[in-house]
Length: 304
Image (cartoon, rainbow, N blue to C red; front, side):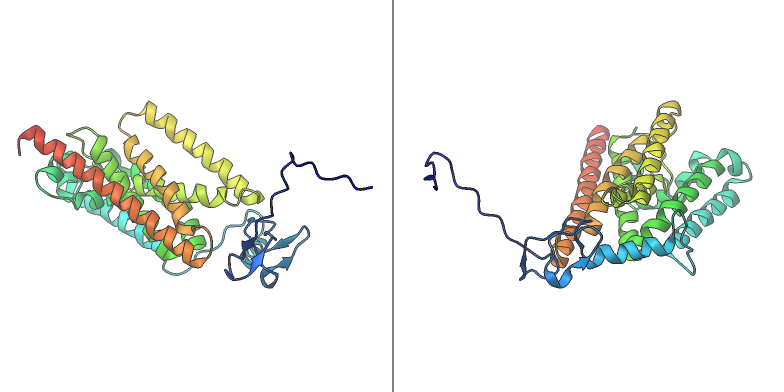
């Protein structure tokens, strides 16, 4: 015999109906077993457990074709290779203009200034804002340029391959600008800053986000462990070696995390585009605000 419902007990909530991330007009309660996004029957691909969306299936096939631990060959001209050539080319210019001592000890401060190093008074008083970008192609010695070139090749190759050249270049230059702006805003007034490490930390931050979103995959989990090890090593080096511009590194890393999230976005295609535009525009706005604030502060100090 059925018992009457207790009026004191609220009825169960009506299950929410979502829409497919690829077909916004199709309602569904099924989610991709890998990424968790809602998918409609047209997008369901049978999997060993549940169903997967077409994008996750394509990604799994690509990872299978690459094989465990196998590095994908990068052929032809890529943006990563062009950036590497520019960095090495500018180091050769440093060698020619500053003399052989540059090879091991690095160029003199004046030589780096002449070539476009980041120098707060020149930016704030002289209006040379281009130094926020040119400093990314200069380096203080052989070890500096070799380490940055290695890091750019490792992480730049992966991000350019997985996210595409336009998004890779956007990540590189936007996060590099934010890193330079952070160094300019919070660094010493007489600092002479050079190095691509701010932009490379931005690419590295995007690399961390890309793998974190795929942490259920063995390769991505391994990449995350590798990334955490590098972050720890760089933190120790920053404390042990005072010449490292940790402000640019930190600014680039944080900007890279945001850029990595913005580059892939969330939701359907139009939503992802909106997230990307807002994310990168927000980063640029933060960089501009930091530069404007520091410029006003320096000008007030010297009475300009």
